[in-house]
Image (tube, rainbow, N blue to C red):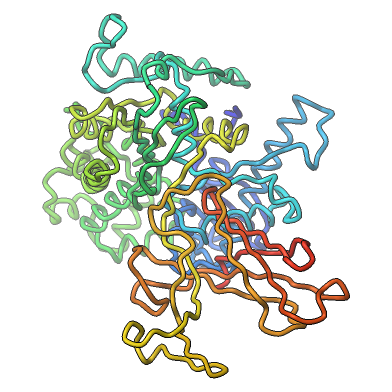
Length: 594
């Protein structure tokens, strides 16, 4: 694993690089990660206004309801740029880094088809967002659209699950208080095992390469066929929940319930801090400060980030967050009184001013910032555990960057420790990355998934008097048809196995037609009848490039095109065949150009 990222904050184990991207005023790539953040921060404030600095932008493509290729992102200075370009810049940077690293290790590496790329996305992302990542990867030159199979999209909690299944017991920090089954002495109190983990991490960070543990770990020997477990992937932006059951004999995985979760990641804690600042100093001031002193604002968020990581439920001493000088100075100029007065006036009783120029947050105040986000996560897991399909859960694996937080670990343990074993892998922030590699080596390991939505098309059926409403009646060549019937390909939460296909035949309306477009509709429930029903929306299109019929086609009669759709993979795929010539027809499925 590549752990050598430049920059990084003191006191934070920098295994993950912040999603920060810096582009020059001309819009060309400058830097990514800590480097981008620190460089932007060191720019002269006047100059900084012209640079494009984006941070924490990954979630934007989930929260945009009508994502297209043209969706824009706003940089810190308020300027906009197509999201696709922003993502492509970041991916291109990763590609150059990774390829360089491989070349150092293996100079004879052929550049083009030697690499299979795996990009991870949250499981709760919808199809357009997954397709968006793929398009961004094409734009970044990871792979060419001509060889789409060289890029896999992996679902994050699924990758974590694949990895957790292979864990050895010594790589776990178990939060449940049960003594281990193998008669060893009970584990040390939690912070000493963290200290060990940190020490191990420090050692392994000095070595460039990382040993992959192959084979099946000892935990697996406790997990039997039929065992069910939940992976709660708590990251910066989302919480993402997946339920898997192990299948024997191959040990493949089967999803028991559609991926669930929501936008309740660690960023929620940052937003709560920002809200607190707005409460103390005023919304207008914070907005002005961000716009006029963007670098100092970044400074403040860095200071908070380090304290956020130090927050722990057992902590009794206050946490100090130093305010940048320019904040204190700017506030006095803006308001005419000083920061200390503002704190007194706001009567936020858990936050005090210390004479060293710091905000002193009591542990209770810090707790409050975590509470809303953690409560959401607990509620989500609880709702999931109550579903009938999800009974009999043995393990709950807590993974993702936010799972490093002692606050979250304690809350999850307190809420669910009596129902199942709560387990945190040691390198918890990297679990997904390692799992994604395992997925890339064997994409068939997840054999059965659940469809997140109901998908289908609108069709005509014979009109049945008394069953179909009159307004749906269409008379065509003397026959009565009912329009807008929602013909389902797959229904919400239906089990779909890898490689399983849904086939439908279409006849082009006109003999010489070159191209057919089929609208795809989707909805969250399975009881809809018409595509006009509430909750049903058009979500994509399938296009079939029919080309010339030429002499091969039958002189009369209609061509039949058989389309096959796959819903069991991490992305929806489609292929098509011309039945009269047995030739395959170019078929594409698009969720981004609605």
